[in-house]
Length: 277
Image: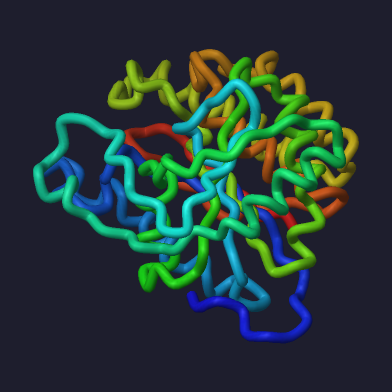
């Protein structure tokens, strides 16, 4: 995936993607389940080909960065944050030298300010693994500038839908907005393949697909606001930081409908990814 050539950009979609578990795509899978991450990896590798044109820049909201107010990375050449623990040594030597985009970071802040949302910039922070791990597959050339945007502490879904809505116009300027998380994220039960746990994950995933793919954008937003009342919600997300990137992507979608672009089971847990527009 290369940067957009000079010209009039086509409106880009927004995505909510799964980013796996730590550096899962770059290590040996469990011997008992050697194909565990294969379908997710194939999905991520194929995403670039689904775009109407390559983006000029990418704005990523990861489930691994929370701040008191929305904050953007503003360095010209961000480093990588190896914010996972206990994995093979070679996974701490991965490289993803995508440039930053200080001008886009400033534009994000201006759009948030116009919507009455205070924000900050962080010139020291690098990309966490919710960014560089999936993008090593999505855009391995690392040529497209990336800005990361934090979640806001408190994890209020209404605030994150509003953040996305404030940034929607970037889609008309060649910026791809990506929420990077997981539709199921309960680390205590992730490897539990008991029938009861699998059923809970499926119940939440069924609800989530129905909510996100609702044809009425107002009804979709209301369902997402009420996500914690869904079947299995707190079993799927004891803490919702990996779901909130979806809210930003949905907010930036405006009235665009969603497509359920990824459906899989990992350790028995139903997982989903979505495209808006």
